Length: 413
Ligand code: HEM
Image (cartoon, rainbow, N blue to C red; front, side, top):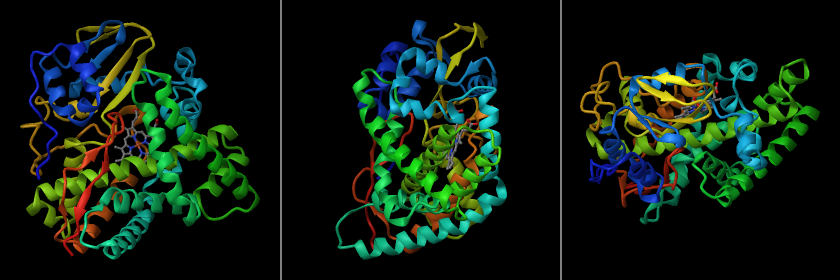
């Protein structure tokens, strides 16, 4: 059952048409053929007052390094009224949606939590979680299909991130639905009602972590929350609301994209059985496999920037106040950067997808995410060498944060 992200599209499609098609449920499920259709219009596509679409690899690199292209922060979300929603109230207090000088201050405060030594120490947590959930899978096997997203791909990162934050085991799985719901706030919103699930999810996470912060302030432990509370209370440059928001962010980012990446890595391993088998025994191979998965089918397709001033951009003008939509997943298939980009090819050299971003907002959790996936997938494939898909996996109805809603498999044990 090979990957079916491509389906034929009219190459003559106009930009507005292709863009509106992209954010329909069908477009979100099959975006790559639409990126191809858009690619015929060039690496930078002006969309008038709606902004600029950027698809090219070099062009996105320039955009992510251009200090005049800002992330959509509290000022922007106040203007649009989105900040009235609890989802955006929280997101605008984190570094990902903050610009200088707040961005540097927040990144400085949290950087230690993502340092290489911390990440290396987390590897064993990921292996242990993967072994636990793989063993549990075997007990669920009654011969019928099993949803690997529910039973493994989300459980490993929920366990690892839950342990790091010191979230009691019995609470962890209940937070999963709220975590995924909050990520729907990143999608384009056509009607404010669409933000309801994200707002509800955010209320759950903020209330929960707010309580846990209070509890750890009273009774510190050796977890990340206790350390962050202590750092803040001894002069760290973060407000209490920003502290809770950073922890919410750590929980969402720690779980959703790694879970999505585990899903797509397993799916591609099953699509390429010979290469998939090598994942169980060859560390260099798993690293190359995850890099190519990040290029071929990344967990985040689109980043947004807002122009602080008029900008001459690769022969086009991005007007002050308008947005640039940077389509990372299209740049990862830019034929000027990647030979035969639609092929899943593990022999690529100098394979540098843009899936973790670039520049000042480059993903702080990139090494942590890779560690989890590189540890978990081999454990699963070693335990179940005859794992097979029993149906094409279904994507969630999301493009910005993209991954499988379900992935039905037979364990073949
Ligand atoms: C496969 C997994 C992941 C992917 C694909 C991913 C992707 C990204 C991308 C594209 C950005 C840049 C956003 C921008 O420029 O606007 C980013 C930023 C960030 N990511 Fe990740 N991420 C992943 C996992 C994680 C994990 C596990 C954590 C932490 C637990 C994390 C924490 C962050 C943080 C804190 C930022 C903001 C950095 C800043 O604004 O300075 N990410 N991520």
